[in-house]
Length: 391
Image (cartoon, rainbow, N blue to C red; front, side):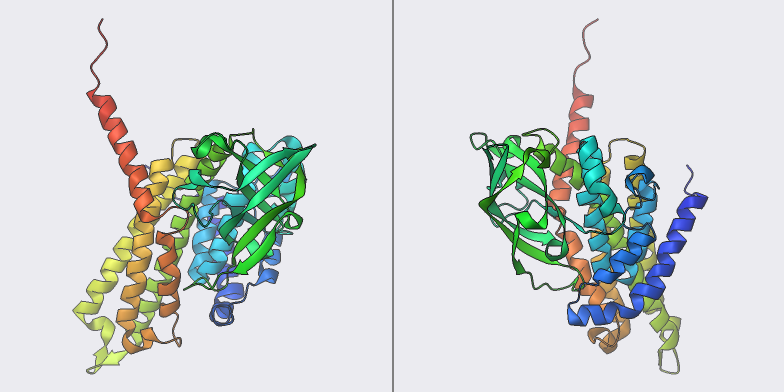
């Protein structure tokens, strides 16, 4: 097995790392403290091709592969996880579904501005009454003349307050329960009303908004993405890939926590020597490094499978399940290594801890990831137990 990166992948990784170190990390603490969405940063990332890393060149993207995209997310998230999730949702949850399911006209109309970072994309699936059970959503889209009249509310929409392109899901068949009656739409800011910006534990540099559609606006038929009543397949396919991106975000947070703990341990002295010379600290750092490396390999493998066009749903679920736990554990251990300083805002460890927790929740909770993994595991086991056909 070849675990090495290609020259192009290394170049993209190096570019993202440089931008993270020079344009993001120095400002991350201020953005967090001020709860500020750094809109100007994303225009710059767009100029560098980092807002559309894996979008085809003919549609305004960099034309790189999905592994390169995952490498970018890890580097950005290492500097600021809020920036990482903004790019992740913009790319994998808003832009790529249009690339995959859109008509030629929709791709040419919506994708280039997204890939160039001229506009921000958002994903609107969750509702106050439907989270993990996404198929129970109640937002409706009813035919009206040459278009659709959409009524409903969405919750926890990442990038919502700053987005110009929304991938939104609504029920077009109210007689059918579950996901089979759901369709996907590409909407603009003129179609939705932002009703609330969420106050969060972490990710303060990202936007998380509630929005409402009051049924007064009719959107054209050209806003329907894919086929009518096929929206749930769009949503689930999007989440399969999106989970790999969140795993990369978690790896970035965990790596940042490890870096902070290691640097502090090499500088802090107690009892006449560096705390890095104490075996207890060494063991903690060794465990952190091992867990981060394992999470990274799971994430890269899932990204490679997606890029190769192979089944990747359970692998993405494994990557997100494991990497999110590693992010939480590593950030907690970093605080412990720093001691009292870790509990203050003088050091970034407490920010990593606050940012890490959400990776166990959004784009499918850890419990949902276990369901995905277990179903696949048991399905394969059941197939192996089926009796052979009579000859």
